[in-house]
Length: 405
Ligand SMILES: [Zn+2]
Ligand SMILES: [Zn+2]
Image (cartoon, rainbow, N blue to C red):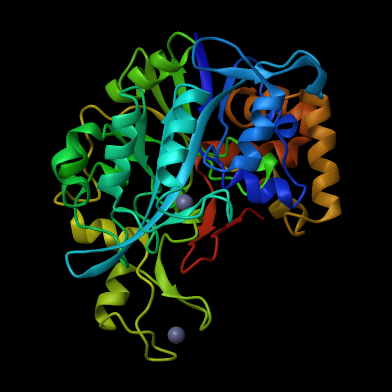
């Protein structure tokens, strides 16, 4: 069965407490038809896990679905898998390391065992994504001790501040981080600011499956990056497809254009300075305005650690689809902010007509787009799909922007 999966949404619990997110709201995913799998997130938080237990019922082995009384839009095809993100902050090899990892668990019993071990290490109640003074390797060991069905995937691996390969507080390889347990790492999350070809420039990542998740901060951003599976619909089949990382079970990913990501280029947001890796080198890593060190972006970091040129094409490269979220396209089209009323209203009008953002972005023919959206907007969607667009590059926490018109 072919289906989409987005395993990592930015802390559900903190979103839930700001009343933005509930399991019910996760039950739609930008209107995608057919089966989709969403990570529950935050399984270490007692408040969120209580809500999940109350609202979810077992579905296929290791997957859950909303109970009927909580469904918002009738016959839902959403499945939940139990996931969490842990922020590990610790000293290793003389440096402070700040690393985010995503955990996958097969059922609530396993989740409870992991949480009961982690609560001896740090506070699980202050955030949906707990910050623990815990070596990533030891976190992996705890998960494997509880159950060999768990999976740990390093999150957004190139983000400068909080990732396994990050320029500020990461390592130079997966092995340096996970040491003797490295062979239990099967996949890495590429994050918004990098796409598969950028990662494949690093030979040391050849044996890892590249997965993509939205890390969404609001429900409508679910699926802005995602994975495409073609396997049985159950937890073990999904995990085994991730581990194998090739077709026919794992078909590839849906990607942000990396230039749009918040950490693609180098620079200083406060000083309004955005630099390419070459410009940064020529400036000795210093900001031409304030003279301090710039924040190195993902492209620079990949160049540091890679042993292959930018043009390198990996023979086993899986297909991937670069998308621009419909709201961002509308924002550029209307010359209005992404979160303005005008953009939101048009977005919902279109979704109500079509039922599916991803269908529009990926599959609708030019003719269908013309009929549905009018020629000018249809052209924008089509150009976004084919990559025929300009993007001002993201840097130092500032998203890149699309320029169409
Ligand atoms: Zn994170
Ligand atoms: Zn500066």
